[in-house]
Length: 212
Image (cartoon, rainbow, N blue to C red):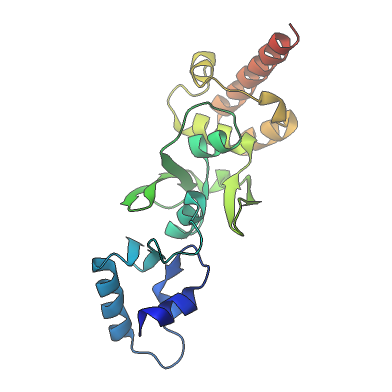
């Protein structure tokens, strides 16, 4: 396979898997050898085994980190600080894209970003949605309510008012309190119900501050 043929096959895909190149009458050993050569010459980036992206100047779109995260580990969705920053609910820049998964936790450092996957139990693995994030790319990301609850679920002391205050949460008016309660009630974690009460208190404080 020539590199021009790879560009034609990949097109505007932000990332691609080895399997995409195996259709038809192809030599899998030759393709893997070529991928290794293109990686060594800097034409492509290897993100994990079997997953690649084109390197500049060959890429036609910039792979959004959230899209890459979805592809790095299927059956995951972007959540925690990454999702909260996306929704404008925390002020900090988040250099690591963090997702949740029911699989074992894992961590990858790649040429196009750092990706962290944290484990949650199966019964709490919901509350995500498919979001358009530009350049024709879509990602599975937690709703604002679920992103916040995922963080509380995973962090020690995450249900305390002190912890939530330290996050410097903003735009709390976008939260659906009923959805927050419903999601928190999915599993038997009193911690989550305590957190909902603390979040509602913070939301009340925010509204009071805005009215001054």
